[in-house]
Amino acid sequence: MSFRDNPFGEVRLPLLLGAAAAGVVALVVAFALLMADRRQTYQEGAYNALRKASDGVVAPVTGAFAAPVRWLGGVGAGMGDYFFAVSENRRLKAELAAARTLRDRAATLEDENARYRALLGLAIDPPVPMVTARAVSESRGPYANTRLVNAGAERGVKVGHPVLSENGLVGRVIGVSPRVSRVLMLTDAASRTPVMIQRTRARAILTGDGGWAPELAYLRGRDAARDGDLVLTSGDGGVLPRGLTVGRVVRGSDGAWRVRLASDAAPIDSVRILLFEDFVKLEDLRTLNRPAPPPPPTPAPRTAAPSVIAPKAPAPPKAAPPATGPARPEGAAR
Amino acid sequence: MSAVARPLRISRWVGLPLLGALLASLLLAAPIRLLGLPLPEPVTLMAPAFAWAMIRPAASPAFALLLGGLALDALWGGPTGLWPVALLAAYLPVLALRNILAGQSRLVLAAWYALACLLAQAVGWLVTGWISGTLPALAAAGLQWLATVLLFPVAAQLIDGFRDADVRFR
Image 1 (cartoon, rainbow over the protein chains, first blue to last red):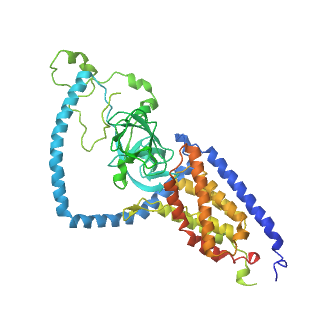
Image 2: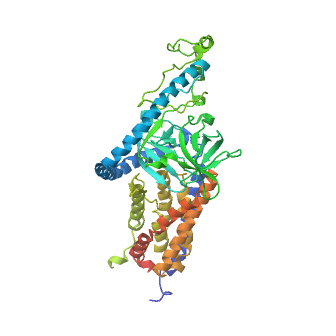
Image 3: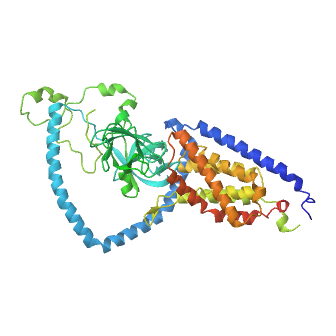
C-alpha cells in the first residue's frame, strides 16, 4: 500500500496539531506556576503543602537507598583505619602536641577576654542551641542546590536557621516539614549571604551561581580581599549569627573574587542546625527590654571603675560553653 | 488482527518511562559519593521527552512532561515550573520536526537529542538567571547537559521499542 493510499494519512495533521496544542497548554500552565512561585521570598507560607508532602516522601526513599552505600563506605573506612593506624597515630600525636600549646594560649585569652567584657559591660551573643541531622537527599544541578535533612519542625527547626557541617557554614533552612527540612546551599543561584573578610572586615554578599565557588559581590575598598583570606558571616541583617566560618577567598577564572567553601573539605553527611533566632523576628519585642537577671558573682574588681558598670555585664568571666554544648558564634557585641 | 496492530496503551509508552525516569532521579539524589565523587545529576526526563516526540504525536506526553517536571522541581527544590518549561521547550520543537527526523540514522538522532538537551539547558539557564538575578555557572550547566546527553541510548531504546508499536504510524 502506498503512502497516498494510507487511510490514516489524513489524521496525522490533526494529531500533530492536537499534540502541539496540548504542549502549548502545558507550557502556559508551567509558566503560570513559575510566575506564581514565591521561592525567592522564602517565607514560611511559600513552602506549600505539595513541597512538604514531596519532601516527606523523598527523604525516607533516598535515605534507605543511601544507607547500604554508607555502610559499605564505613566498612572501607574501617579497613583503611586498620591498615594506616601507625601513620595516623604519628600524625595525631603531632597534632595533639600543637593543640596543647593552642589550648593553653586559648585559656589565657579566654580569661583575658572575660575580664575585658566584664570591664566594658559588653552584652555578648547568647549561646545558640542546635540540633544535629543527617543529609538524606541532595540536588547538585546548576539551577538548584539544596539538601533534605532529617530534622524538622518536631525538633524546633524553623525557616531561616543556619546549617553547618563540621567544617563550616553549609546554608540555611528554607522549608520545614514535621520531620524533614530543606536546606538552601550557599552555592544555589538564589542564595545571598552577608559575609565579611576577617583580615579587613570588608563586607560583601556571597552570591551563589550553581558552581563550586560562590562569588563575593559588592566587595568594596582597596585591597579588601586577597587569596586565602578567611571569610566569615558578618551577621548583617540579623539573618545569620556573626562569625560562622564560610571559607577562603580565591580568584576565579573570570577574575571575580570567589570563596572556596570550607564545608567542601569533606562530604556533607551530618550537619548541625543552629536554632538561631533573629531578634527582629521575635514575637514579643518587649522581652528584649526586660531587666536582665542578676549576674553571677564575679571576682573582686581591681579598680573602682568596674564596680560601677559591673551590674550591666551579663556574662561571668568563666562563661565558656561545654565542649559538646550549644555552638557560640565568634563573639561580637550587638 | 495481529498483536502488533493493537492501539498503543498510554501506560506503556508514557506512564512507565515517566515513572522510570522519576525513580532514577530519586535514586541519583541520594547523598552518596563513589570514589570520592558525587553522583551525576542528569535530567532523566529528557530521554522520554525526546522519544515521545519521535514515537507519535499525542496530547498525553505534554501533560506527562508537565507532571514529571513538577516532580523534578519538588525533588530538587528548584522553582516550581522551571523543569516543565525547560522540558516542554525542548519537546515541542522535536515534535514539530519529527517528520524530518523520522528514519534518520542513530548518529543523527543522537546529535538532535544533544541539541534538544542544549535547548532545555538554555531555557533553564535563562529562567534561573531571570528569577534569581544571577546567571548560573556555565560549567555546572555544561556538566548536567553532558550527563543528560549520555542518556541517549535510553531514548533510542524507547524509540525502537514503540515507534512501530502502533500500526497507524508505520
